[in-house]
Image (cartoon, rainbow, N blue to C red; front, side):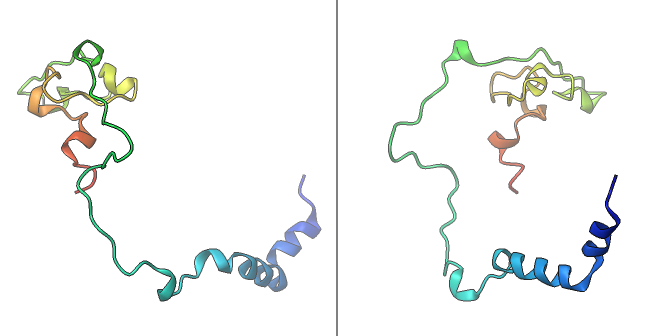
Length: 111
C-alpha cells in the first residue's frame, strides 16, 4: 500500500527540482568533454594476444533447410543456433547465403 504523503512528495515541485539537480551531472555534456575525433575501425584489433580460430569440429551446425518458396525457412526462430544464441558460421550453414542468423558476420546490424 502506498503512502499518500509519498505520492504528494513525488508530485511536488521541490522534489522535481532536487531530482533534476541530482541527475544533471549525468546528462550534461560540454563540448570540451567530448573527444575531438575518433578512428573508425572495421574489426577488432587483438594487440595483446593472437586471435583464436574455431576448430572445424567445434563449429555448431544447425539443421535448417532453405526452401525457395518460403524465404522465412532460412534459420528462423526454430533454428538450433538461434535457440542457443549462437550465430551460424558462414560456409557451414545449410542455408548458405540465405541464412538470417549471421548478423555479426555479415555486419548487417551495424549498417
